[in-house]
Image (cartoon, rainbow, N blue to C red):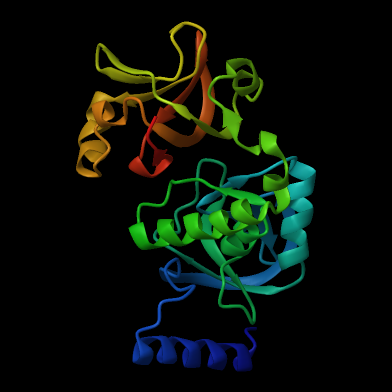
Length: 256
């Protein structure tokens, strides 16, 4: 059963937010998808409720080792009553329900708290711009404060060190560097961070989703000679690659 006092506080908070125009910590609320008590933490971004549902924390990726991420998540949610919010409660292919999770008594999502502590990475998978901006801002707090994973220089991979990036094959990574050239091969555009196309790091954009990047002011040619930060899963087609599926995976850092 839900704590009536908690439900009352949630209603009061929602009313105050509407009446004052405040949106702090509310951008990732979305629609209610139920609630329950956390029975177990499965991994660094998944938990199981006492009714058996497995919940995947939407909008974030694991940072550091799984044991460290799992311990950080457990410290926030173990045994607590939580409310779920999201755009869609359909389970993923592993049977997990993606959701934004709010622990009882907190107006900040568990995702936001993990990011602020430097115990998670913003995934850039969230389509809602305000929610995505909220998650990015939370990650920035930890990055600037060198908290959690950000205390280690290797948290951000150097695009000039393809071997270090390739060592993270199949894992989510954040990479920074200068785009030396932009080339197209068939329907794929390559943002090249090195001069050896078969060995150096590159980010790729498929032609079918190019309009989304152009609409966001991220036409590939405009990124040439710019320092950018990209995030995504590391693959390999010769050298290390990150496939860019959403404009939110690119952050322009400056000029040459």
